Length: 382
Image (cartoon, rainbow, N blue to C red; front, side, top):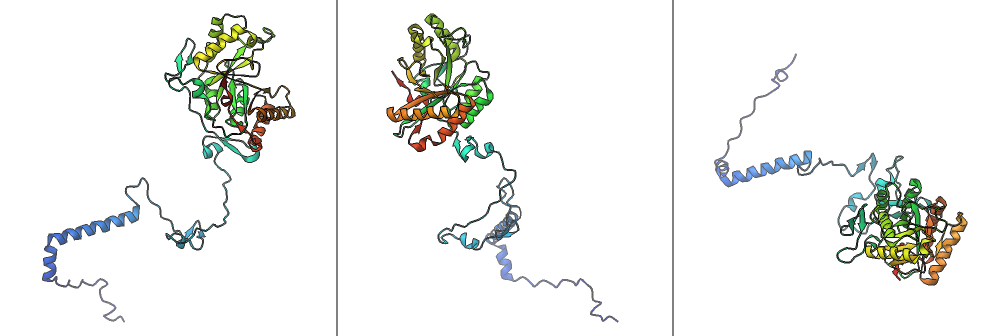
């Protein structure tokens, strides 16, 4: 049998509220006290909302994690003390980092960078400004032509790779024949350090795109000018070949077609030309046109005795013999020439073996006391 105590109602009537004193009533009637109470209530509500959903001014909710235990593992000892300002000298701890089995690609991780897989090193791209630069070209009959800017600055200066000598002997290389073979062209752009100068064939399809890629990787660029060889026409460099016996006006006309193929080059180099470069008439017209357009002329050594605009001549062609050992010997000879004369320039073609040997050589040449330089840094007026 249940007692009356156990049969009492589950919900009891509320007890009467204690009477409000007359002093409290007068305080609530005060407008300043009422405003303060409202403000305090507003702040309390706001802090509660921020704690629940995060800062309303932020673009996304705030997620709070316990620092004492993250990822199911306890935080290292002393983490609380390390967060206190002035808590003493920083400490170095050893830890193990587990890498993802599906890492992001090199392009996404490094941005503008050229990776050299051999040796585990990479060269920063150090991109050159995209061509054309304002004020350095005008529209010609067949396309844009380089011009000297109104302030006197030349395209040779504007499009050359910047260079600061460090007092060491300078070594430079020009790798040519680019633009016709996509794989070789991409290999040269991607695997050679940006100090290596690249030269492109004017007949290449998508020439401007290749030049843009080369400059984005930091390479300065030359445009190849086909010139008459001694065995012409059996060896024919194409319809816009500069011929030794042509009038000067015809030489300039063909040269301007070559120059109009693209923008972004600091000068031109010869493709063949053993006969043309012996012609005073042809070379005078050629070099006068280059001087008027503010371009440099970098040759493979066949025009070493010629004077003219900004000039440099290669001391050696490094790949006349297509073997790794022969190319290495030529590269060492260039180093010896730089040691003797303060600088030396070599030239080569984009053969796979040439690209491979030059990439390996460039990785260590500066450790032997030389400075790798763009070809433009070796050019001078003669």
